[in-house]
Image (cartoon, rainbow, N blue to C red; front, side):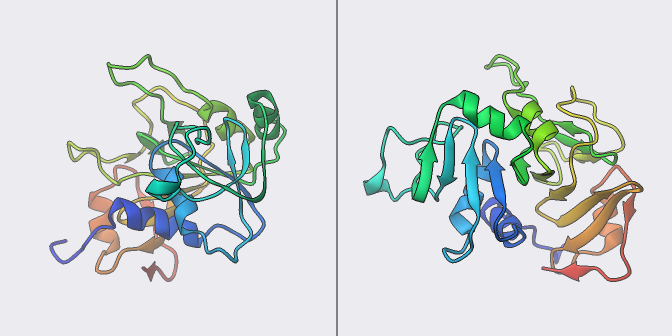
Length: 220
């Protein structure tokens, strides 16, 4: 493990951005997922959706080009790509609940081997709330989670069953961490990709749930 260098948060967002398919409509959750829009190549046709009423959201603006009236769902400045649209939140959630979002990328506290998702806001300085994540987890065709492999206390976030209140059951289809990419399958977490130098045994030490290896594991 001493030779293994985990991805930093920017590299995590870049790694996930590589896998977003041309033509998808994609919702980006609060926090780190919003960075993904910064790393989609300009010639790749991906339409980003923000639950506060944006379709065609672009990357974060340069500091001298901030429009205070154009923000993402996390209240941070964003941009609008050519052909983008603004609309009210009711229409935005109709898109989500109507099954029109191909992919939603969320952060999480924990993901269970069954795909159960726990990402409620639970810190003491804010009112606990699930926000739009429950609608997105239920309405998007796929849910990918972007999170660090371990908590600040060094505890695994990929678990047999979630200890936090659930946002949605069996919703997550793939997880991107600072060490690996894992698909959620009927048999549990199957390793899709690992950072250079990482072994399956070493990754298992950072994971509570049992890992499944494919015949060949690619490394970033």
